[in-house]
Image (tube, rainbow, N blue to C red):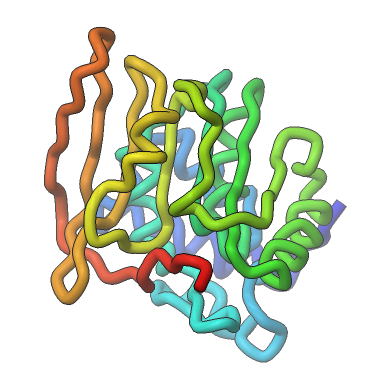
Length: 216
């Protein structure tokens, strides 16, 4: 099991700040942030910035999102403990690790286009003993599909110019997706699929994510 002694205090202080600022609103999200060491998901030379509330580069033009944005997305996603969850653009693996501390009796799948980032994230998840219920797949999230409605929750950690139809087709009725949408100007979108299959889309706060990439 990972020993986080050098960073535990900084993590607690970050969680307190996020609670005071209103980004963390629930006890279960606070507990998940306290359990997951952000420092193991960032490059070695940036570990000293692990608990700054800002995005950090992780290579290949990608970033680990700022903690406040991770908190916003997890709170809005509102997963259940037995859900089947998909993250597209799982990058470092940090957000899916946070979710895994909430979805304790379910399963989580991350899709990452860069093999090197996927491999690195799996190693980080192994340190936290989460790979029994978290899998990372190397794939293009704009093309990835199951062919049926299977996921209770879908979260996308990169901005799409519009909501991808392949992801909507995999969202269960009664399910929810959280995704940044836009190019120059982006907004977080919350998408609910009601029991009849009707799609309801709500635009939330502005955000800034790297674009959802396609294989060339």
